[in-house]
Image (cartoon, rainbow, N blue to C red; front, side, top):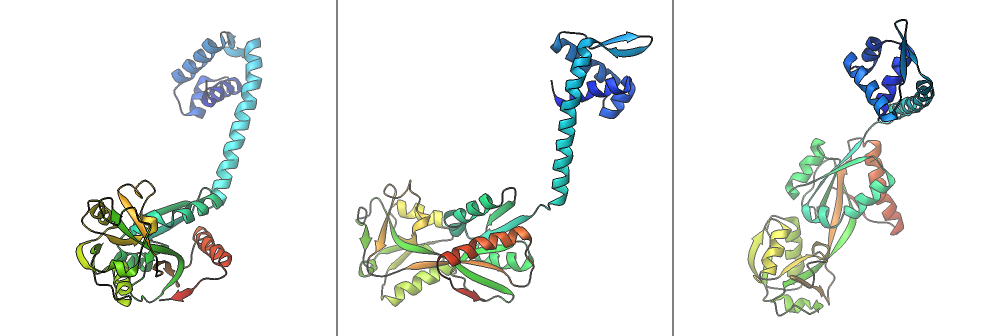
Length: 306
């Protein structure tokens, strides 16, 4: 038994006509008859009796009509209320374009916090190459972009540093470094490194760090994504400098081992990028507010324009 069946019973009682009831419920007259028969079968009693060409309620039908009328009335009222609220409240979407390492490993807690405060709002995250994120923002394909170490200026765009990710040395389980908790900058010299391709901002940032400390290592392999780098490291092909957040709990201490850099601070900045010229919808403004709140809590964070 469902609401639609109760509505058919109510309408048939109110109109006294199978054809009108069928028309009101967008079904055939035979479907009306079948639903009434099914009701009588479930209730194990007759609901109607015929008299002089009319259909009249039996005592059982009369009792059931009052209940059906109230139930259908409550249901119809709820539908009207929900429809009204839906019409009054626009459905907004927040579109995010992010590099893989920031999107997967760092910004998920921001997204969860936003959704907990804005239930029903849709947020979509697309993982893109760093070079595609600027065009996503300028073209309006995305409201926000997340990048590490932005590599060039772009007119009309603004950026805000929203996080810093500690960079650590990552070694495979067969490496002599496995089992240690830290490594000095000097010990990085002479290592076989597996890095991002040279065009990546994170690679340039890593190269600059190593140069500033006089570290000379051998770049054995270069890849365009962080998961491939981790796979190569786990296989014993070399070590890498990666964000700590990129090594999952189920990997750390098993296939991969993370070592802090004991005598130098190496932090990779994560930036939120957005258009200064495009008006944000209310949901996007609320998303930006997540980072405003975080900045106030931290006592103020750098805000720059590019």
